[in-house]
Image (cartoon, rainbow, N blue to C red; front, side, top):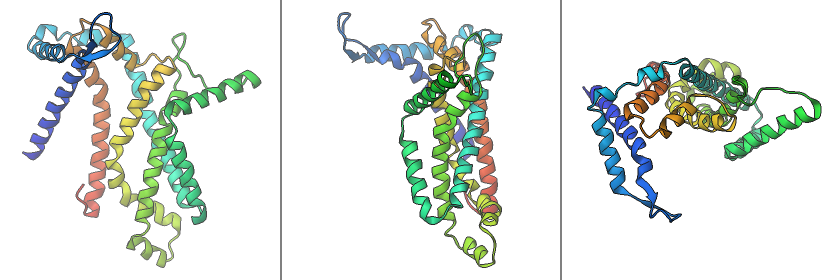
Length: 295
């Protein structure tokens, strides 16, 4: 019963959030036609919100599948999902590699590595992308070496470069969090007992510590997903990628677009991501139940 109420509450809050998302632009309007200053127009916002709710009771306006089920939209949809899932994979692989290498560094070197990670994680996304762009441009201009295709032009969408860019900051965040969890875990009694028995650091890291931190790490998977999704908006815009975010942007710019269309487009896009998040959460709970933890 508790789970039913929980999921019902999630459904209702999701619908409320999407309704607010659709009506939010109407909350602001120019004070008068000649003014350059925005003001709050609560009446217009409530009117659009009410009209949006009323359209739910009109099944005739629910003609969203035909417009979505086209070759162009599906290609954009699959392309963006590819970028998201491979970016998530890159984030975990790169972040995990950094964290495990860090745990094998001498203690005197670890503070320097932490400072470097903190510095890189604090750099804005745009600056990092700009620096990588300048490096690749210079490499091509001076040496005629093109490592990757950066821009989506002539119907050819790049894959590797957007995935790498999209996973940079999430991988650094994941590495920082993983390092913190590993250092805390390394102070526990079972690690000290393993060291006393003569187990190597690699055995302790991969055979014992990794299994025990899975439940805690799975809790923060939502944060990694959120970072990848927000970066995707930036990456698709900056590199002229014909992805699903562009499709959503075009849909929102059409005044006559039905709210049900928007809900369907967003829901179809988020469904695989939500299923992946639930799958990772179940894995965390499975490992947590083995350890006797209530996740």
